[in-house]
Image (cartoon, rainbow, N blue to C red):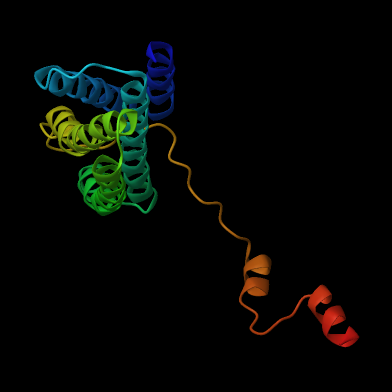
Length: 193
């Protein structure tokens, strides 16, 4: 699990640059919070518990990627860096909340109807979802605001390459706007009928 975590951290730092560092710190905090809560509950870490920790880490990575890509999308649409950060976190929140609540419901069902190792998996899984929501949304936003919020006139953010869509030449765009044009294949199929 340690090597996988380090590979993920390295990839995030290379791909998202400074926001990758924020995401990596948030992942570390997520893992630390999860282990802290489990030790407060005096839970024994079993193989199903480790599998649930890996799943919780994957959910936290997904949340961070969603946030970073939403910020990139806002920058791509021409928003200022401060606006892109704020809007990116706000728009990613609904998706993150929905996916985590859906997974939490499944975890609670496992907890209610499972027994033995399944219950152990479910406990760690539910706790991991809660810690990943906290670390991905609130903690990482706090780090971003701490780093970029103190700058009055923010001109750019270090979030990797923001790919701008290629412009379509005028001749091709006029072909795209033609209404009710069927392809040669569609015409051939309709003739056979």
